Length: 503
Image (cartoon, rainbow, N blue to C red; front, side, top):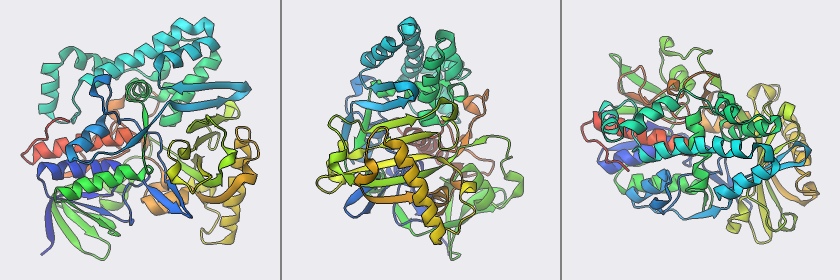
């Protein structure tokens, strides 16, 4: 007989682990299957020659111990519930933006300091700047007042509607607007509007007009409340804490266990088949794969494939990890940077360089006297399809491209190339190999004009099969997939007869 549990989660990304840990804490037997030998997906860490590198994410919201600060501290609340506290280091600046013509902006955690610095650069827009960011603050105030739960859970929606009728109605209206169109109600300066586009692009990989106002209200307001906080020991500490919580309450995670198929009988998901043909049965199955991988690879039903034109596809990344001589990083250097050489190319593949230096906050991540740097920029698999990824030509092409990016970063850190002592690179093909994502993509993006509620939710067309992660509402980013995990766990728990308590 096949093993049987209450819930199976496919993939140990942050969304999947959040779902699994919360359900197991509630008493549902849960198992996570992960093809790799480590948890976290793109929010994991890897070690090489004494350095601990972030595999992907490094800007983290949701960590704040002081509930009175008006913060959406979802991570902190989850880890409290699991009894697994996580040490973090506060970052005074979310991102240091470096833009054409010497235009620089530091997105300070101190909101007034940030707004005043923008006002000094654009004195003629000072009032409009504050009114625009006040709009984001108003969205945030609404979201912060509402308990996290599933938008597909009628009982949850009814409770929110009864307890917070005005805020719920106001949020419904806010979902109709984009960040960019809202900005243009208050601002006219072309350079300032380009910066607003870059504020959206920094986390949504879309311009402000294409970015829902609700999403912007989370990411661009919470940095001034809970702030940006980096987990001590690197990004992998988040996934490891979720795994500890899962296991503490009796759940399990199986590494090196790749799910090849969701078993569907009579229109309902009843379990999964692993590589090697082992089957495990469950009352509910949760996919942390992309919407295209779930309904193109795991579920064998061509009728359920997502039409190619329904959403835009988020890009993948070319990544560079560097170990460098510590003397190259000047005192007062911030952790997160974004570099744009030309406005005309900022939203083109490779046009914007994302750049982090985690060791300025946590020196333990590198050997004494060293720093580590992480550079990444948008890319697609078709740019590398010409190479056999086992060939020397592929390795040479990666190194040459990486050095061209390092040269661009030397505008910020002169002589960086000569300070490099270790370099590791990854193409979109690497993301496909490790994350089992179609084209290495980070999920669907909304088209301009689409409402945020048109994002896929946790339920799917297959009964008892649910989705979680960046393919689902509210979208990309660690805090967003954490919310999707809370939402998914909440819906499943109520359906299985024991509703979750609000965080």
